[in-house]
Image 1 (cartoon, rainbow, N blue to C red):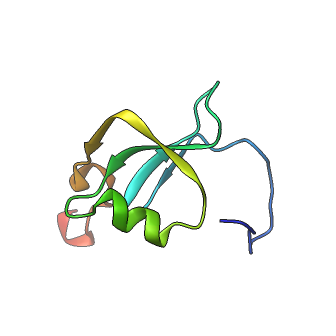
Image 2 (tube, helix red, strand yellow):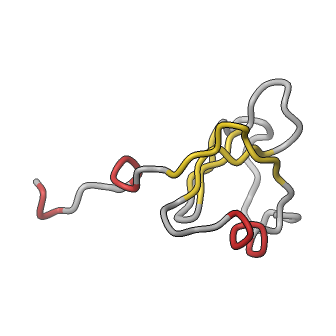
Length: 77
């Protein structure tokens, strides 16, 4: 995003950004966000069209397992 609408409490303190469309990282030595994983059914072109921020694509880009990034349902307790 070009402008944060929330109060900024720290700069350069986030290592990963996980959304319903993809997983991005900030790695030492990289310039900006790096797309590491895409959600199932999401194309790189679709993600670029809806993402305001610039990002590069990892040479090891893969599809992520949605189950790894979901919260347990209260029913699962």
